[in-house]
Image (tube, rainbow, N blue to C red; front, side, top):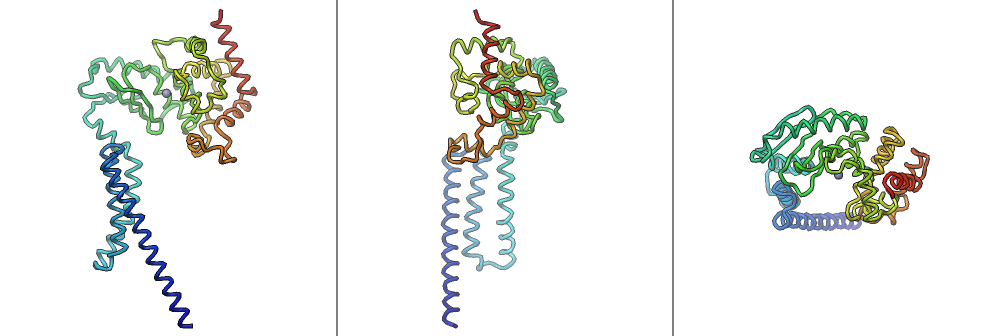
Length: 342
Ligand SMILES: [Zn+2]
């Protein structure tokens, strides 16, 4: 009896030691990875580096605690344990708010100009700061029109960062932020934010997302999006809309099919009304973010329970418009041809 008990205790001790050393090895590897990544790759600027260093230090701290905690007094041991437990929480908060930290670091000396619907931010040496009032008034007006068109109202103002030169403007709808070149079209990026407020979810169908942002861009260069679409199709051709419902297919088209997308969305709005469009938008914004990610990696075929962005989009079109997507596609192209053909 005693023999079995000792044997059991011994097994447990071996297991504990094995676990301790395996955990330590994993932690040391993570620490080395994090510190190496911070030193060599330096992702996401100084804030990213700082967080990786902190992750490395935390892993080393855990290893120390596993092996050497008996060497310090109980008080120090307790405090160290408390710090090590709260550390991941602080790390998580830091990581998820890194965007704010970076934004602050990059723009802390920028000036602001507040209007009815925006807080404009611009560099102190911004070359067109004397025109800011006009710049702002035009955008406030476009904002009002687009909100009314989409039946949306926003509680908070949009933070709009204006640049002399930015490779490509973008919007962060979850944070109510726009980063744009001052000669980019007036309404494109702000529309990404306004339309986000229909369903409070990111739109998964790029055809709809870029379509509506381009349709409501208030461009002074391209004033007829239907004509621009017709011209695009004549020059480049256009895959079936059901193909373009695939984010990957949409992204791969050259040039990017923004005008056809805008024209199709505009057609839906003009012929079938705002309510139907809002329903279509919501149905596809609510499509699972997880499924979209798996599809982006091209792994969807391995998971039979994933309906697929395209199939989901097609069935929502059928439900809302009582027409199949390919029927709407033909109807729209025929209409374009009638308008601009010959
Ligand atoms: Zn866009």
